[in-house]
View 1 (tube, rainbow, N blue to C red):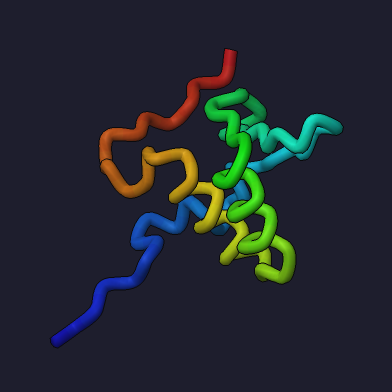
View 2: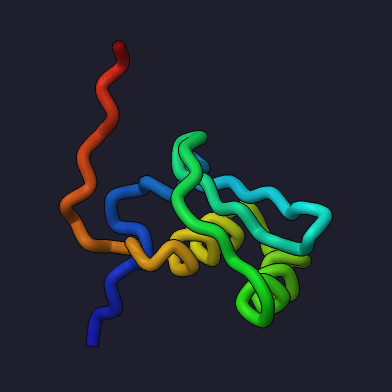
Amino acid sequence: MNERPVDQRGILQEEVFDYQITKANLVLLYHRNKHIKTLKGKSAEKFQKQIANASDFDAQLIMAKATGNFKRGNERPEIAP
């Protein structure tokens, strides 16, 4: 059986996701510099453990999965103003 690559469109190579950890131990997730999700409690702890030693690509994949909007296929490219 042929297994398809995780990132067929190469979007995660562009490093479109970012995160920030606050003093209150909240994890703020960003997509193209736009805040899209906040993790708190056990989900924030789990995220921090997963991302601690992850490579750049794996970190992007972890953040994409954490947002819940991974691989839907209906993402539109942003148009520059």
